[in-house]
Image (cartoon, rainbow, N blue to C red; front, side, top):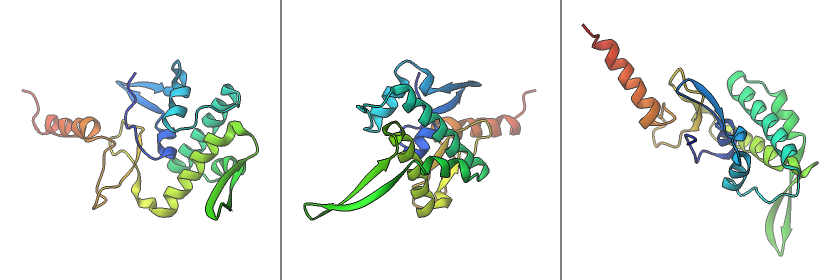
Length: 172
């Protein structure tokens, strides 16, 4: 299983852990070692928390992130964010920001939720859903002119070009 669109900011990478491939919905967390690999990819492995509790927290956060992005629903995301906070301080004279959560199993989920808030605070217009109607993926547009439309030009961009060509050149 090859998951598309790796390397997006944490919040979007969590949302994109569910995707559609040839009409079939896939979920990275349903795959063997999928959750562990996702955590490792984001330097969040090695927690003492129960892995099933971490999974449940991430599933709740993923649902809340998607609701915020697709429907503008604040409350589900705010419930996830209520599980923790950032505590600024100093260590050895250097600034330090510690993340404090009420349950260690919620650290990855809370961090992803806080990341969406950061993205929306910085450039909400650059957090976008892929323009292909069958795609469920989200991306952070970091292009110079802010004109990116597709999660991937190689996949959805080419599909759209092919569909336009087929419509303009009907078979006889």
